[in-house]
Amino acid sequence: MTEDNWLKFVAFCAKERDVPRLAQFLDLFLTHEERQSIAARLCIVKALLAEELTQREIAEQCNVSIAKITRGSNELKRLTAEQRRTLKKLLGD
Image 1 (cartoon, rainbow, N blue to C red):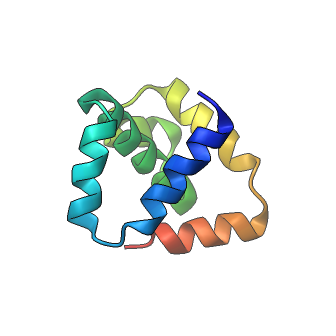
Image 2 (image 1 turned 90 degrees about the horizontal axis):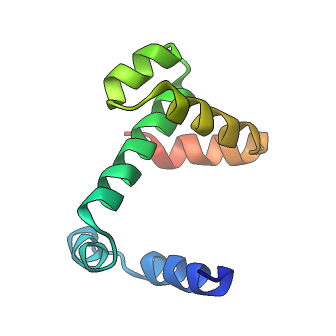
């Protein structure tokens, strides 16, 4: 995978404003397992940003391993404070 193709894919996704239609397109590009993995990562990131649960509790809630929680936590540490605020805002329900 090239970075250029990844950015083209992200730009493609950003253009589609209709969520059901985007979901249909993503079904074309992603396998069931890939969609589950992304959904689990979203669960992990939201829980880590909320800072209310332990890693063990997040693992149980998101049905993932502690190692995946640790990887997600390490990735979040790379974000700037502004990026964290933006991500929290975007993921807010």
